[in-house]
Length: 111
Image (tube, rainbow, N blue to C red; front, top):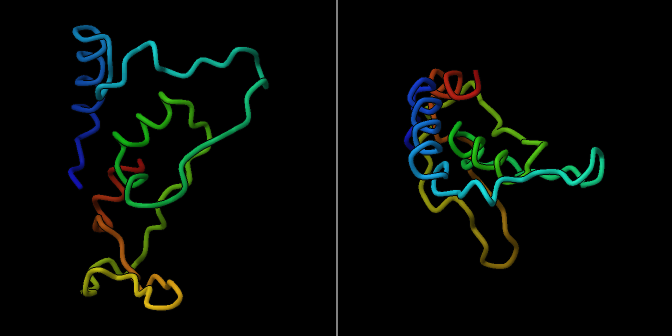
């Protein structure tokens, strides 16, 4: 989990696009372009650590995501929970109640 400052994200993405024809190794030819307005179903990633970083949200958008469910930000962001946090001996339960970024970093990413 390495947040990228917004300015660096935008300038770096534009520089990659100019020099390499890609953004985060996604070639321009793979960018999603709707064939017709309203012609494609609205898709997007489910909430999780991958939707907590702005660069991942940008990549999802470039590949066609138009609905992005962000990771829930919790007030108690400094809990210490042993990993792995999923116990699946018989049935699977996620016992984690935390987030990967602290509140300030989450605010910076989502803003």
